[in-house]
Image (cartoon, rainbow, N blue to C red):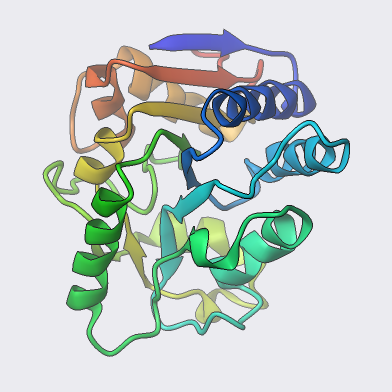
Length: 241
């Protein structure tokens, strides 16, 4: 596990974008695993700027998102479909057919999860997976005590995660209590992993991920077993290392 310590969020975003850009330049048809939430927004802005400056070409890139809320339509402004278009896809030349995000609004969730796994495998697997980390150590929506062997699946969100995500909704009652998420097994099959963490609220989770025992109680701790993980942390998130 390679740890890159930076001073602030802006520096973290720039370094992360350069790593993703290098992947695309070296392999123009890269398979990118993407994340949502506030953490990667700065990185996406940097990638958009690189595209506008003709430094990057996304025309052959395929993307797979980590997760999506269960029960929200793609048009809902809190869905991750909406988030990705607003923060990245609308501003780069990625092809619509190459964008993959779990559908959280289907009747047969099990079939949706199985198909998502199938499409990832048929695409050749994820070259680099971007991750954030929750305050409780979750990655994707894989909450503490999750099954490490799980592939893409429907998960019940913990109260901590619901409360953390309520800042994006009008009220906590509107926050979905379930989500479709790539499982730990799927994440660990990615060839490379890039995890971003900023802010004091992530310090305990970052410590547990890097220094703690490997345990389902800190889902991100399993990344200690992956052979190509880069973690970019700001001063506050790395304060307990």
